[in-house]
Each structure stands twice: as structure tokens, then as C-alpha cells.
Image (cartoon, rainbow, N blue to C red; front, side, top):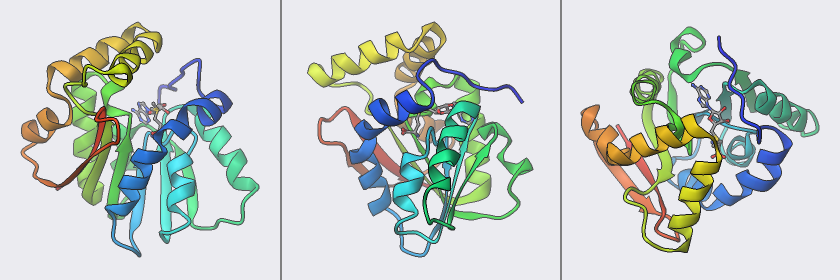
Length: 203
Ligand SMILES: C[S@@+](CC[C@H](N)C(=O)[O-])C[C@H]1O[C@@H](n2cnc3c(N)ncnc32)[C@H](O)[C@@H]1O
């Protein structure tokens, strides 16, 4: 398995970047029924997992960055939380790690950074191991406001491959394009406060 590495993984991601996703995380949590099991794909340093585990009985975070998973586990160690756990694994290979079916698989701000084929493979893998999928990511097209432009700059600064994958995500009409290509159905959608992100529950 290839390890994923970004210069901002670990503590920097956790303290500086992840808190910006709290609005998306709140919308995602509100879309799920109580007593549900959740697997969070591309969990980063696990901020969503820790928040969701306050409310849901079983939450697992999966990420391909060993530095992010190490950081998440170091946080978990200091908490009295038995219903959360983390796994260093490739989202494209979920079925080799999980035979059980989850109520929901979630994925936030991950698919826009994946190459087109990987994006489809990961969504198919999530479909196999969960009843419903919740995706939080950029709204495409991005609004022409300050936040929209700063998101584009952030994507550019994340590196050439990352930016090319983001541009490909835009070209394929973001989440809407994915849902159509996979023949899936949108059950619920909420737009984020700045109009630059949305959360979509699909089956
Ligand atoms: C921008 S971060 C998002 C983290 C978190 N979901 C959030 O919203 O803050 C994207 C994460 O996806 C992970 N990732 C990318 N490709 C992956 C793959 N194939 N399998 C598992 N994780 C992956 C990266 O390592 C990174 O931690």
C-alpha cells in the first residue's frame, strides 16, 4: 500500500485546516439517524470522527496518510472514547478490511483531490460497504466571491497533482457529475454558509 503524504499532514492539518470544516461536519452529522454506524473515508486527523463519536455508537476513520492516522490515534489515546477507531488504509481497498456493512460512509474534502478513476473506484468501494454515502465537498461551480477565490488559491498551493485533480473535479461537475456517472440518487442536499461547499446524501 502506497502511503499518502502532504506537507501539511498531522498537527498542522489538525489545528489550522480541519477546524474550517466544522460547518460541513455539522451538516453531515445532522443528516444521519441516531444509533448509526459510520465509516469516515479520508478522515485526515479524525476531527469528524471525534465529533461524531459523541453522538453515534460506532465511528471508524480511514486514511492513507500514516502521519494523519498517527496523530488521530495519539489524540484518541487521551480520550475516554471506546466507540471510535482509526485505520491506515487505502479507500480504494475497503472491502479487504471490512466485511460488515455500515449505515453511512462519509467523505469530506477528499474526492476533489483524487484522480478521476480513483474517485469513481472509491465511491464504488464506499457503496459496497454502506447503505448510504454522505459527501461534503466544494460546490461546483465555485461562486465568484472572496471565499471561492481563496479556495482556488488553497488548492493551487496544495501541489501540482492536487491542483490538477481539483481542476478535473471541476471539469466533471463535482459531486453532481459523480452521482450521475455512478447512476446514484440524491436523497438530501444542504449548501454550506458561503455557498462554496455542499453536503449531499446519496444512495
Ligand atoms: C483534505 S484532507 C480531508 C480530511 C478530512 N476529511 C476533513 O474534512 O478535514 C484529505 C484526506 O484524504 C486522504 N486520502 C486521499 N486519498 C486517499 C485514499 N486513497 N485513501 C484514504 N485516504 C485518502 C488524505 O491522506 C487526506 O488526509
